[in-house]
Length: 295
Image (tube, rainbow, N blue to C red; front, side, top):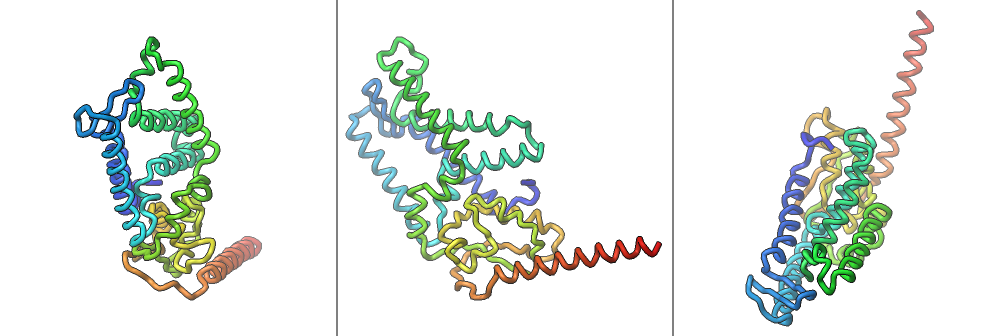
């Protein structure tokens, strides 16, 4: 996606994603909350303590984060999936990389390289909470063989999940996504659609990581509903680029207030617009052929 068309929502999401990832790395790295089961050492707020005290701080941190996230999702929608989940961020970035490689904006092997690097980084990030990563470089350590095997196994599973399962995990398999889809009821952040300004480029549909049609979300159908939308804003960026020459507001907009479900048939309107567009192209082609034949 071209950065000049990037939605403000996407830019804000990038900052939040970056902050979340940095926090998850920094907490164990600086011993704010750190388990080291391999060496029997545990830390909380930089002080060495017992595993039970560290576990209490660990559970308190995640429970507090969970409650805050749950409240935000209930009111605004599935912000956790779109703005906080680091695994989802990696999956979407891999999807962008694949598209860029297909368009030859990146080298052909870029998706494979990113997949391997992402798998390694996610494995290191996970294990760093519970172990001392430097054991990987200490062949003499008593846990070296087991730890190396675990590291390679987790990296292998991560690689498979990234490359083979991809965004289908978010769309169909993620258990957190299942219950957040039920819990997020208010939808104070929603995607609104104005059919009159749509160019029928379908780019927003292609770029949606949840395989939704963002234009139909206002209808809240079984297939396309705000309970499935993760508020990532990718469709807004796609719309900005696709409808760059459309004056005024773009067809897709983010609204931040509770809206009633649209009762008009947006799908029917889009179908009619496609038919009219096809008819215009046909007439234009026939007119051009007629003009050439007269000459």
